[in-house]
Image 1: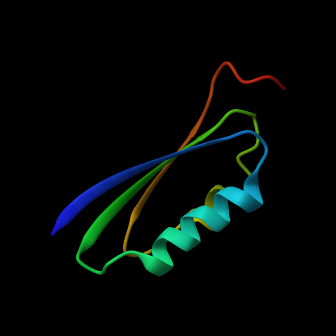
Image 2: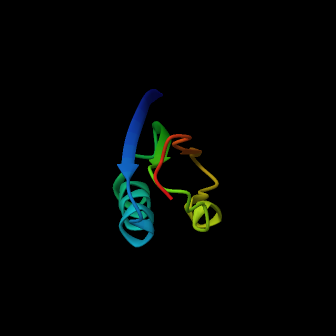
Length: 68
């Protein structure tokens, strides 16, 4: 099994971030363990729950210096 970490950085792009994670999950080989690191550069954490996938790890971080 191989490991891959994917970094996704966004600014108020919840639909695109969710779509990116879903797309990676749909097409990733089953023997590849993926960890997603999502950095949101705004105070919006409303979509954090939509990024969950049972076969992968999603780390969601808000940028503490993000503009309001």
